[in-house]
Length: 212
Image 1 (cartoon, one colour):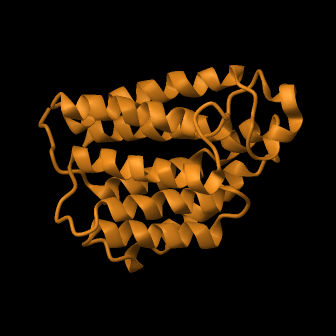
Image 2 (tube, helix red, strand yellow):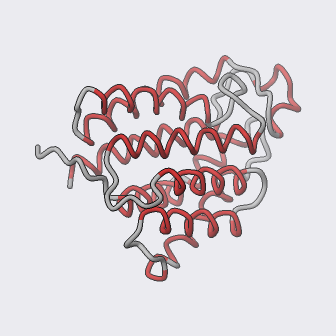
Image 3 (cartoon, one colour):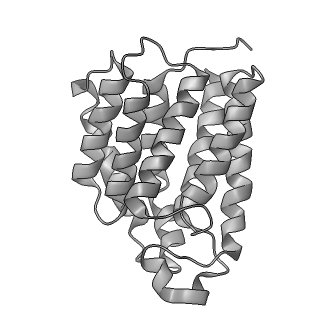
């Protein structure tokens, strides 16, 4: 398989959007265990809007494109998901400002920026039973793979595997942020919906990247 050093930002965002929409019901079911059950619905509505406006976005510049995605998501997704996911895309956009092409190291930088934004906006960290519990390990794995010179497909695969293990492990954690935190110890025993979403998104990206 041919190794690609340049990452197609459009491909990645479209895959995320389609995954969010197709998994709406599953994400809602996960969130309903200890949350308010609207995570999947909110995420799907936001990314539906992204796809509806796809041809309007300036996709010639990755930073501008991601910034537009951030604004669309923030304006459409309700609850806590909108600000968090919107902030993630906005911070990611700043990491590639002025870049003519996006490579593996840039993707790591975007994810690190997104993570910092989520931490700041959500006042959360790894161990609080949020999407960070999957996103941070996935980014760590991606960074290692990129540093080793792995292809985009291989790096994604490593990130997806790390995200899945970490997402499953959130079942043993007690939620400390969001509505789920109100349930106290009852939040132990089920995985975090956001963390699982990160794993599923990366797994689909891996499959689609290999098929291209």
